[in-house]
Image (cartoon, rainbow, N blue to C red):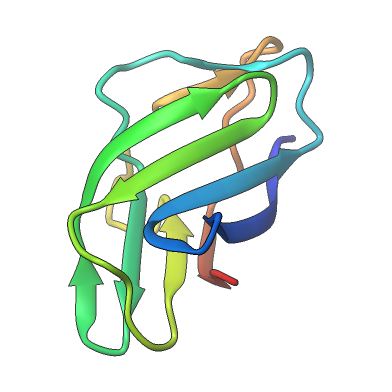
Length: 103
């Protein structure tokens, strides 16, 4: 099943996070827009995810409402009864994950 491989800031911009998703069959696609399954936090608490974009075939860009501070982390499906908004071409969702460090 699709799973997170990397979580990095895009070109040093701490308001844009790129997730590299591994084990994707074909490409990722949105099944239930808007996509709200990802959350981000840092040492100061929650960081609002303003926008989620799928970059074909296997990357996801998160645009944050503010610059992430110390100890940034990203989560997928970490809430109670989480929404699934992204699938791969075999209709498999991205596996849930918690506390993945953003580098």
